[in-house]
Length: 252
Image (tube, rainbow, N blue to C red; front, top):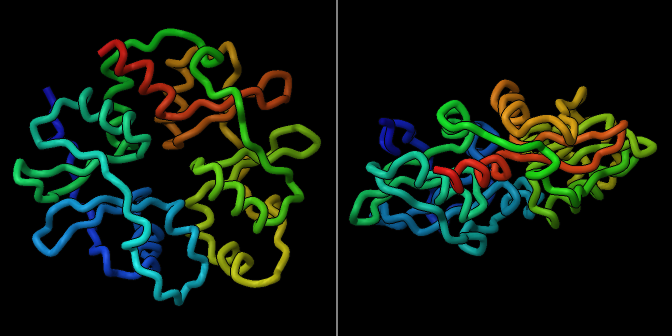
């Protein structure tokens, strides 16, 4: 039976006095959505995530990480994967720190690595419409990147659907804002860039009557965190990995 130690990976940790620009570089170069913060003794002090980093748009900012640190989810190497999932779900994050008994940070477990194992290990019942989030924040295709940026920061969601005349045509994520140099430049000056010029398309979708099991398989196959739920061309909900986890951990 696999435990936390079997999925733990080495990740970069930062000190609270390092600059947010350093955190941006780490997030841009790796697949992480969170970065763990440690003290001088390598004790876990907390974490910051992509949304925190996006709040500072200046690429030469001297703002330090210390003002953005929040409590981090943490498990030990002997924690079961189901308990790891519960820790991630409770904290509403996409990874958890792995620590020794003395609190020393030694690695992390990413939800993207954990999720496929849990999906294959447990039976998932129900329809997408019963597990999805029904209040969906969307963007219009002609919205400026500045407006979309503000929506992502305010909502804290990892991605937002893009609509044209109420029809889903694309999606944009926090990682797009980190990785796409053109987007970052448009945010840093007065250039008006419409989101339809930088969105990802086509979009993987589900229907309300799609089983949660099938929707979860789409999340695994395409390595995506959220899937819009569309009924007759209209976005009626969104299902993410955490929604599926709620189904899994209550039965584990």
